Length: 159
Image (cartoon, rainbow, N blue to C red; front, side, top):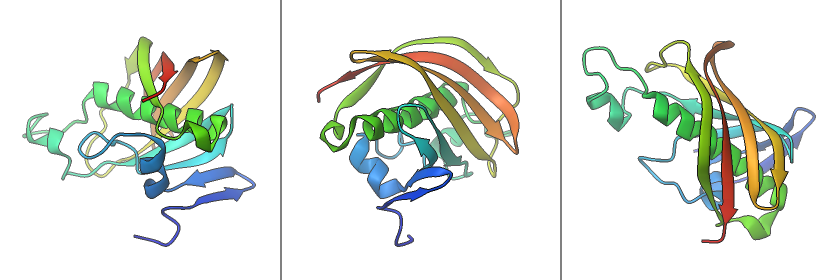
């Protein structure tokens, strides 16, 4: 583990958030924590979640053993976790530990399978927010090509 995994680093490209900070920001844990890092964070606007897809993922044992494919619902969940990090980073330290619940998923499309060895980039943009309800648009990309996309809404609540 590198020394920056718990830090939030600001660069001209935006902020980078490592795994230890992600674990302070959202409640997900193995095997349901589906993002490894969040980069290019621009508060209240957009960010990119990174998921390094490994053959060691527990879902590959049954989906599908002869030809492992990351389930689409888990790609959507990884998008939502990336959005939750954006929400917490936008709202500030007092929001750490709040829960971000899915309300809806619309227009989900899966263009190409995500397989072991892929680096899944989850490009999330805030469309709008009103009180504790936020709406997002996301694209999953591998090697710069869109593999999945969706729009979704989430509600932010205290734990």
